[in-house]
Length: 198
Image (tube, rainbow, N blue to C red; front, side):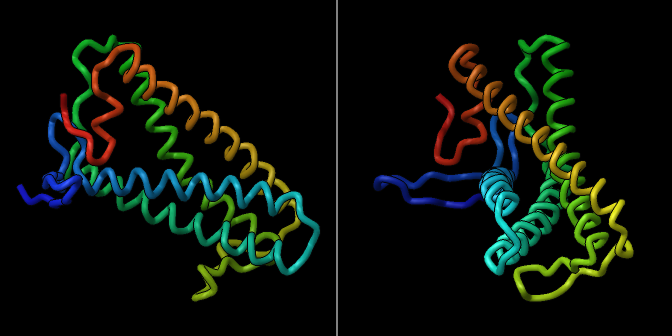
């Protein structure tokens, strides 16, 4: 199996590119943590821009917000494709049926929101007669015509789903810490780079 080699404290750590039954590989880890950082940036930029008066700075922040949203959408699609190619490690055998159900549902909702939120934002921009420009490099086509009523609805839905995403992320983090410090089953550390199995 091909792997990435990283020198850490004078030792070479071999990180498999693909997932194994014990842990996520370097590709899945990279997708995970890059998306995490981008989503956190989205919340900071979105909240800041939302409270600003109309200005050039607000326009630039919203352009950055939309650009990151498009990027997150693309990365999630690629991550799901990689997940189909290299399946995730199985959940711990001692997890109950309801815990497995909650884990699968929460992951499904996270992926769904990460895909739907950029699409709704794109519709909200187009309905507001604003073209989405990706990092000032090129414009995305407008999926809908200007429509103030649709714009207002899409903006409200976008904000509501964004807060739902934040709540799910907090639940996801809490569950990861619960697995690590309460159950001690290694679920968290298998997604951490440079952390091996004990």
